[in-house]
Image 1 (cartoon, rainbow over the protein chains, first blue to last red):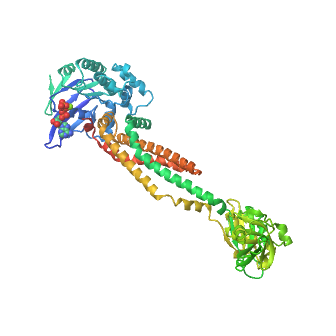
Image 2: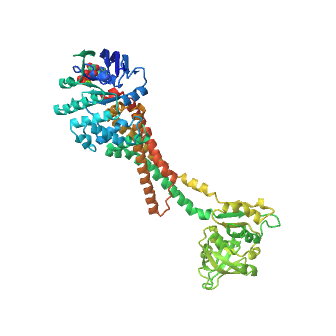
Image 3: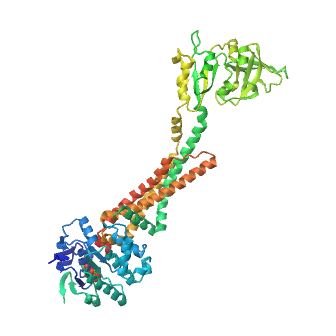
Length: 225
Length: 392
Ligand SMILES: Nc1ncnc2c1ncn2[C@@H]1O[C@H](COP(=O)(O)OP(=O)(O)OP(=O)(O)O)[C@@H](O)[C@H]1O
Ligand SMILES: [Mg+2]
């Protein structure tokens, strides 16, 4: 049996505020390669905290996190950064596109920090944009795009580095139902190609499309039917 | 991360807010500009001072011959031989003594014989090439030549002021002067002396007439040299003039040209230098401020870059690069504006502008350095951010 993509064991995350907050309490989670999983839960329950830890943007206070079989909590900053850049793609609710760069430049940003050669970078970015159906807007600035189009550009950027794991925090939170459908169709296609996808969402329509659902309440994670 | 990518990202970051970046460079433009103008004008003006004095000062060598003994230290003919040295353009031997400096000289004024004017004047014996050596100009008549000297003609040339004191303005009626009751024909009036200007109030007689007035031996030799030859001639002249007793001769040589230049540069207006440095510091604080604001505005971008795999050092490098580019831009503009100003000032004053290449290269580097220093703290702040916090 192959290594799971994600393996969390006894992960806690405490914020040393006043009063201290336990955002994640003893979370165990296994995600296999090719899983499409939705994380649901009320506001403030710890969904984003979990995603940050999974994305190596934050460290758990205690517990272990193995990504592709690599124990990450013991890794130093540099090792985590490299792993993050090569294995993980992010999609955010607020897109995080650079306003002064064109669509294709925004996508090309995904290869700036890796070992990728400069040669052919634009072609690869155009291919990623084609994958999300945005070939016709390559030279646009982000503020000329609709919300759905912006999110597709952001997904193209996440796909550009060919990650093993796609982490999405409320990817459809700012989109109407038609654009939401388009993004979900895209996810279905990516999952079919073997990408592992985790999606945080409020919306039942979004979680219903996932093969697997987990629910967080007050930092405690449970498998949902 | 490749250098090309760092460059692209930094340029894009700087050009994203062009007006702000332009305004941020102003402090550096002002600082570097002031420094370049101050140093450039000082060098230009310094060069003018040196240039004006140079030619005369740097080509004048004087040899003082002490009196003493029966045998003269320097013979009248030795000055002529001096001219054979390479680099000597002319040489004149003079004889002058305390007594000959205070002789009563009278002029017979044929126009007004009743007015007999006696004046106390200096009488100096000099070889015929005095006009060349002192860069003098004949205002009237001519200077005596080798013929006058060898024939022992009783002729004199008056210095400009001596002529005025004696009331002799023209040579039309062959004026004469009386020295120690002997008459001498005035054959010329010399003026416009640029060297040994004191001779303007003297009466110059051929060396062969010197003994009549008590001027037997050479007391001074004036040498004019080619530009750059003075130092060498100053060393060779005593040997040529008096091979056996050269050590007794005193040589007055011009200061070496380098020292003259340094002296002029010491006069650089310190106040303007301080002003330039202060503007530069203000410029640096400005860049630091704006970069810090930019960092705070771009927290989300920093978070995104970290999510895309940027290490802390990549974030720091980008902001350092951006602030250095702003400093560099300020330096380049400041240096250009400064040099144009120097050229303009030089043109107005009809000077030759002196632009040091090193200054032209150092100014932009200094600007970039100011930007780099100013960016240190903001870049550190940006690099220290936790990616999860930056993305919130
Ligand atoms: N840096 C922090 N310092 C202190 N408390 C924090 C910090 N970050 C998050 N929290 C707290 O941790 C809890 C979980 O936050 P989290 O952002 O994970 O919620 P969420 O499930 O993503 O909510 P939402 O659906 O509104 O985005 C919240 O109570 C929040 O106040
Ligand atoms: Mg959240």
